Image (tube, rainbow, N blue to C red):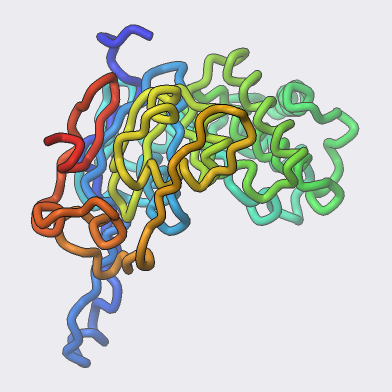
Length: 330
């Protein structure tokens, strides 16, 4: 991939803060407002045609980051540049038009489909909303899209409850791709599926990426899945990206202690050298009261005094990766 090309998506210092316990009742009770910093000055980019995998523990802010990038959640601050255009403060009409190119596949294939709508209505709705196809053309386009995801035209009149979990996710994929987007967020698209079905959906997403020239932001808490689908991997912890780099390089030689801990917890089935187990102490801190300095220092076995006082910046290290760790940057 050409390193000099402009990225399709470029995110800089993105923040998403939820103000909890605020407003009139908070002032009457004279209680301090609580701020949940779900995404904390995150920066990354995604090149056209690549898959950036985003991994981290549940509750670290992965889905919030992805939905803020799409402006399904409005950012608190920072910039989101898509195809050379800053979309952070686009007016509603312009953002609606841009959504044709930016779509999302949701995690839960049961909750993400309207149970009262047929497959034809669910998959065809984006075409109607964006008025980019005549009513007479919609059915033909829906049939073609269903066939591309492994479903049949005979499924048009059926409802979501008549399908298995894997088939429902195929319907969700068809709905996301019917507008011919260039960028797709895959928000844990296989985590709710059986293992055998996961493999089928991952293979489908891979073939669609090649056929349609798609760019993915692929979210998962399963490092095996992320390693299989990604060109590059970003590791998230308590709203921060702590490491990012080429998938093979990051999996072979992780730099951040948190990344090492994630990888060391994966069972090894090959005959290669055994990976040293990195055991984390303590519990995940509350996102309402993150620790000062490096947010990981309360669980890191290598933390020093500097880690407790100074927040590390995401900087380049040996190879092509970047890491936010004082010890690795020393």
